[in-house]
Image (cartoon, rainbow, N blue to C red; front, side, top):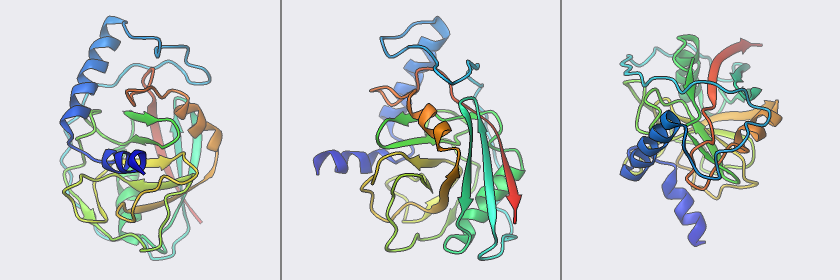
Length: 223
């Protein structure tokens, strides 16, 4: 129970500890240093750590219809996986995710947080865990939502109300992450879970990947 409580507190933005670890990670990458966690890339291609980006966008108009069939194809440096977007239960959140994807917002961002057996998390333009798109949306997730393996949801700060989201999203890699229904639903991985596993294999005790894991592009397919 204590470990679950700790994990719940870690799906947040703006923690000073996260920023500090991120700064150390950037320094180590720049110097070519690191611990025994810095190992081979496995199936992941070696890529450069992208420069931080400051982004300020306005919240999009609602263009996604409730129940519309949409798939997000997420191409990464560790392979490609697909997300069946749940527009039936989360039309506002999916609408924002689709907007950011089609705007190219996610292009060349990273999975900055990788905690094996829990989640992989990305979509921060700063790469530190505190960045966002310049706007937020709020849509309370279903009360009975369970964050099981393959579930994709949005990260938020502990101070934010349930369902608040910006651009950072996470994919659950645990059988059940044990999180309360406070994180806005996006959908579920429907194809290419081996790519998610490849990203998870880059995880370390510090929850930072052994090497940069790049989101090259997210393409939205309809129908």
